[in-house]
Image (cartoon, rainbow, N blue to C red; front, side):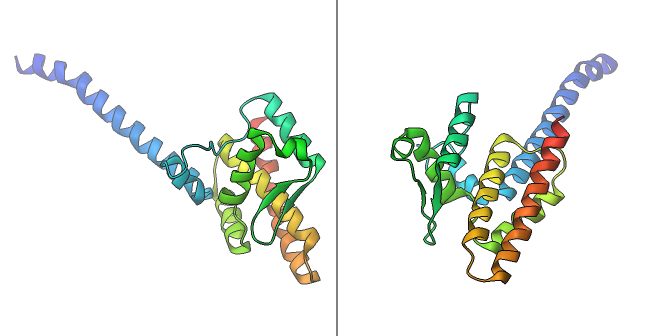
Length: 176
């Protein structure tokens, strides 16, 4: 009876251990993702459930993002984001991009440097949301680099730009 009872319990024990390991892995993955863009974690917990913090969900969304970036965008010193083309700016999807650019991507240089540090420590490829936010942060740093008042500020933003570019390149290289 004892051997039969142990044999019956073994699959249950293995299942519990496997579930526990999956929960730990899922928690670690979620923690790493939230560590890159802390503002996104509060959105995922329901602070702003009406907005999806991921912009691209299809190839047409990728084309739309490219079109928006090529038509022109502005980052104001207040942190406000705007699309210069009125027709593109009026799209619901663009309002989602506004939210991502205003609320999720880091604007302070210290936060961007923290992101760069997190990206350099990151193993494997980025989740879609993290990749998108990294690209948008790269766009923001390019804007800041161009609009910097002093050469020193331009150099600091340029270094951040290059570091973000290298992180994106590393991620894309891992995928190929």
